Image (tube, rainbow over all chains, first blue to last red):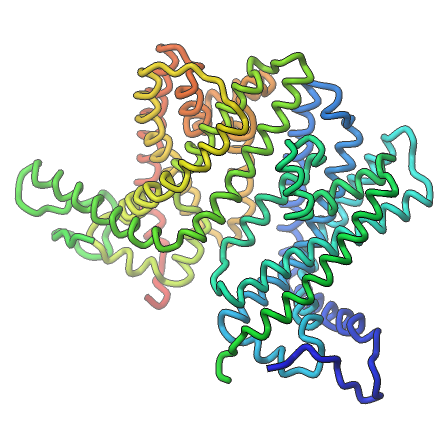
Length: 277
Length: 295
């Protein structure tokens, strides 16, 4: 079964904006769907507040004993925490729900319905689900970040601000690739229920700058699970630690991951036998 | 599972009815032992099939203490080698034992009750002649046997990397072996109790969240309690949490004198007695509220 070819558009030729349009369409459907359950917003607000309180308490405990942790001050670590919450919100809003749906579709054979549509299958499976209430964490993370930046003596100019935004985007792309590669393994392994728990566990390590971890762990958290790129790197951009070499490395690695992910996804699809075919 | 015969009407739980095989107290005890052994064996047999899944879970679980360990070792080194009475090596010992204690005190998640009540699975459970808590306790106890085997290489790996320092006396080991089961039973009771909230309201998430945050901060799961502010330590003393985490850990790594070891075991017994009584009462009330769906 082939579902990966370019979409035959009626206008003829390939429309590069099509993925974005699909993205917008599914976002609207997802939002409308969740707007029916408004009480869930209150639950989400409560959970985010509790998680934020816990995070601040931990930070308070650490800085009750010391004035800096591996060269990072309290305000700088607050910035790391802000990025961590924000990126966590992005993951749970847009990345994780799509990947979990893909896993279910592969297991039940319902991926057929995606593959028969005249769109690129990878685009389709990546934009189908949106949990808008989870975006509360994006807002909370942004607020924490704003407070942290206000506390930093240097402040932040337009240039570093743009670099920071670019780093966030690169980080989100890398996390997406990581999730999709693992989820694609479902084509062979089928049952991967614990994956989500495993990722959540490992993601917690991003609450602290990866530089404090011992070497083997730091390398794993950079190249195996790209948490260093997704969380520490944007925080480094904010705290004037980022060098141009690191940024270039991040961009190159993101590009490499995108290519590998695309290749692996196609390989997995070829292995998919469908439910009824 | 053994099929113990019992005379109570189906669907009328409450005080557990002993599965009697012969007559007399000895036969009754044998019936209970058989019930637990059989349930544990079924659980071991089914869990051993999911090794990959269990390892995924283990790696996710181990990240949590490794993060705490790295952060606090870093702080200790920056403060001249010690913080809150812990050197990096002692932190390593604390958090490596933590991983074993964490595995041992995993109990039925209160979220399972949502499914049990909504899916009608509870109706079937009520038909059995023994209180359903026995099935949960024995089933998860069996799973622990599998988990401990999977845990051994992880503990060896962590020890190799983080170089723990400890001074263990034989008495510490004995107390630890009792205390981890005490911790398991105690935590099981509280999580069961928490699960029963599902019978009264369907919006259980926030209640569970508050419980788990309180446990995280006040049990010694996040940091050894000596690193907490004084008021938090006093609060932890009057709550049950620390007897399920901090106490067994500190008992094994040799941080507690004999009188503290005894006191800890006593507190576990006390809290188990309290929680079992509350579970018994709440279970009766809860079942009365339950109206079967499907089943």
